[in-house]
Length: 86
Image (cartoon, rainbow, N blue to C red; front, side, top):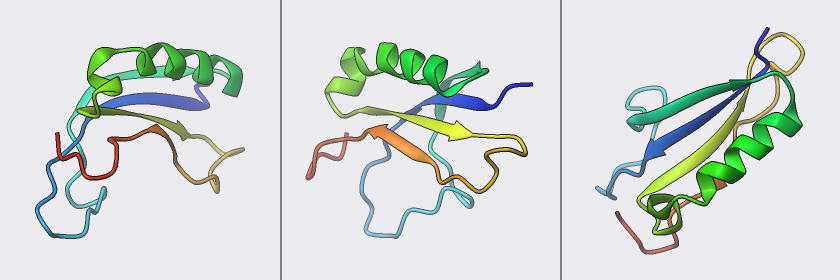
C-alpha cells in the first residue's frame, strides 16, 4: 500500500484571493507513490533539483496517505520565493 505521494504542481499566480486546495487545487504535473518517508524524500529531492522548481514556477509536496498517517499535515518542501508569482 502506498503511504506517501510526492506531487509536483504548477504555482498559481497570486490573484488576491485566499488559496484553497480543496476548491481549486494547483495543476498537477507529476504524482509518484512511495512506500516510506525516506523514499518519498528522495523522490522529492530529485524534483527539487528541477529548474522550474528552483525558479519558483513549480512546487513539490509530500502527502501522507493511508490509515497510519491520516492525521499528518501536508508538507510543502519547496515553494516559490516570497513575492514571486510564477
